[in-house]
Image (cartoon, rainbow, N blue to C red; front, top):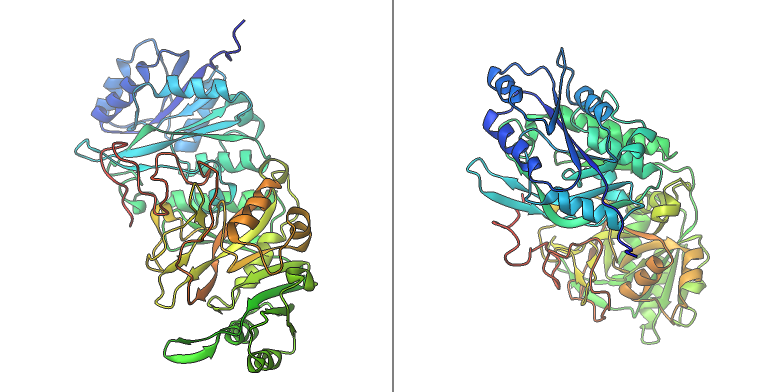
Length: 524
């Protein structure tokens, strides 16, 4: 007897409003190549172009055509398409885009292998006006925090029909972000969202598409901002949602009434170095920058002084702030601190963003919500680290094989490929040069060595305990000295769920493997 799961049935939903007829033709033809059980539901949202009407008049019996009497916008038209669907899964296809050859068959086979999935998404690329396929977007596996900051999923998206209905379907008032809104409501319930890491969708850079110009549909980003705000409110997460510096990217400013004691744990040997032309005792200035510039003040500083630390450095450390405790031994390490939260901090750092610690506290203080059981509560938060010259030291690690810092050496104000430097997101590891976690989790997951664990050691243990690790650009420090060197530790994991198997291993810059697409991605 075969163990193969039966293939699901698919309803492809396409809403139409005045596309170029040639583009509509290509869209319709790309659906017809499927051999799996599909229906193609096309809703004409009262197009005014007679050529579009003539093209729709000629569709064959494989298309179920619904004509709206009046234009209602994409939410209303998509809701009509959903209401007309009769198959198990809904597949969303825009009226001028194209499915890759065999996309629906591959999608159906993948869904059959993941029968518990509530939604599935794939990678995509773009079609230039000259027809060239370019700019592949190779996505991570499901990243709920990333989805709150931008709709990184976009196309191709498939959702189980009964799940779509159960979470409220396509809601009015979210035009341009209706798919983002739907995904966020699925995520709020902690339902499984799976990723098929292959380009199965070609997004056309037509004049009216945000694939060409983000300003083409500004309302889409207003809708997305409201969708994120509604999603967080549904989970009881107090936050303000602001537009960020890039279209379609949002900044989530969490609020928390909790002000737990944070133990800032700084191992040091009292090293002195020249920074920006002056000589400093590094650990002293690391503490001073937080004590004088930081907005979060419910702190203790626990300095773990190496036996080689000069007495004069120890004296300076004890004078810099009355919350400093110097332990003249690394024995006991982090266990010498008493805070509910622990910020592991390198001694060669200097605070940049005054509210960095408050940001990290808020990310670790979210009340339990329905998604935690499925996706895992936040276990650690890492900061954006800049070198003395303002370039990136660390924005999280890619950990497949030899760990590599994300975009090390890139300009500190660059958004990075797929905006990874500009958004809070899940990653497999962050640097212990500025990592916050909870004391309870530290006690649970790792037998701490004399001083502090390495980045990969600690983050691997946190992830093994079912917790998520976040990078946030809204917490930032300078790190001087050896910050940009790769970590001298290995990882046996062959892949990183927050990278992509189509990307080159051993790198942190999203370089695709050879012969995967027609052109490299654009970093702007």
